[in-house]
Length: 75
View 1: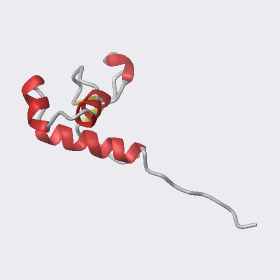
View 2: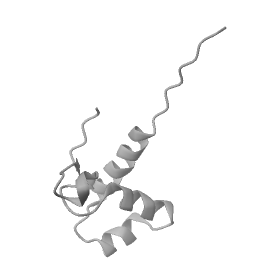
View 3: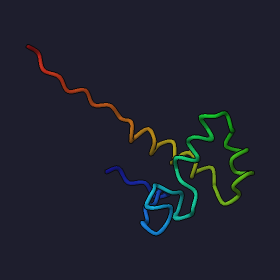
View 4: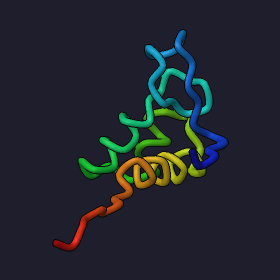
């Protein structure tokens, strides 16, 4: 697994979901807010504990999760 310094997993926080730096802010929430049109500045205003680097790493983590590897055989 790629190392993410700002993404944490703790079974006692948000049921073990990927979160931002051990806070109760799931990566999925941050990615969803961005996908629905919020800017990083708006997210930081709404969640002042989040830093710009957290948002960047949340997107990197989401991209890593969706990395496609195609495996096929030629017949």
